[in-house]
Image (cartoon, rainbow, N blue to C red; front, side, top):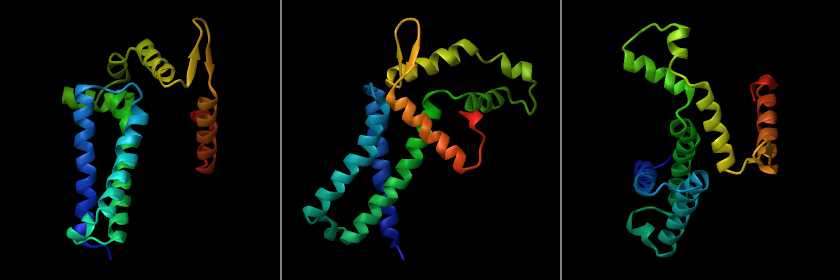
Length: 172
């Protein structure tokens, strides 16, 4: 059984790095957000844990080396959920926009027309294309968009994943 202090330590580690992430984003948003999230939530906490163990500080916190591994895995689990939800939050996803529309209007019912009026379809498309260009998943030569090896790989992974789940291929 995992000790309660291990759980608290893993949660505290996550919130420490979440605070650093929010602080960083508020003052200087990085160009490559996904890579920065990976470094901030996976690499740096791992380095932190290794230094903590090598310096022998884990014993002062009443945690064994195995406990520190558990702390890191709990942190990784929380970080994974956060990183997975980040794109939807930062991109102002249509689903979240619809929910926010309900919240702001205090309505329990909205028509398709009322919902559609809140969306600029060209902006939605241009925002997605700009994001894909920014992350170098698409290349734009001024006339045509071309997929990169990375975007092809990502699309393939999602196709395989959807196939494993029994979902139709048309969803991507």
